Image 1: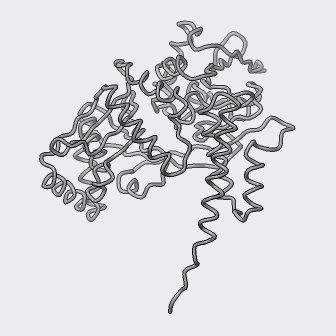
Image 2: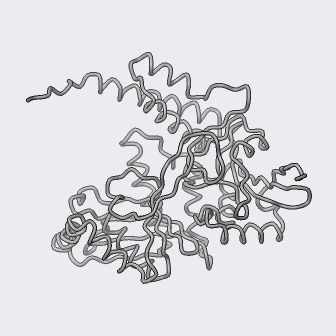
Length: 386
């Protein structure tokens, strides 16, 4: 009879050398854990920065069988580094799944919120993430196949590159940069974008900005975070911050010059980053969740994750339910709005480590959603013509 699963909650810094060695072994040999977010290095760095950081160590008897890095916000639990962590699950050997619901029970979480769970789970809904997998010969083989399959799209990007060069001067691309001033510039661009779109500014809380800087400072042999840039002449046209480990390169925070959108500088930078990083040995380029139209032209691989909120037995409502109910009564009915609000609340809850901050964020989210509904209700319906 198998021994009962037990959990110990510790700080990452308290893990012994044997447990760290197990973590490193499992995250490099279990194919489900290929994302850089599963590396010990990510947890070790993030635990120094993220409020409420801890590691759940799962054991059967004296044997360690898994780890789950996480953070707490009151009685709620999220993956470590949320809302910026795109993949999460239990670090365990192949075939050693510890299910999502079991994790929530052992952690005694009032609520466990996971947007990209990998591993066994009964709760929630499937979501798809997308990747570009390069063949052994690297970027050229991938590009030849993609250009053959989607000729119009990639010919258009080749024309866009020529147009950008004609307008601004020679195009230069650099990757593997670790410039804190450039990173601050990118963060400021993203923060402004969030505010313009009415989304919660994930960088306003401070620690999220600190996390990107801390990760970028760690230039380790098989793990790191860095910037890539594209210039046309002397002008910065696009910039992206990425996380990478092993042969896996995760595109994370992109930004480009909006006035040059017609030339697709962000897409051109992604292609050039793949070319340069592919020459360094990277073979999987992860674009995160599907959705943006351009991704379908790049990706040739997909991974299914689970988006779920696991509630403690006896609790039946989320903190967003009051907001959702009010918006329903205001005319904003629909499960899409409910899902959007819950994701927005998950972002606010993860960013803000005080109750007052979470309440402020929730109030802003509710006003923003109500305003969007009001605009839609005032917009005249389109009339179909024969």
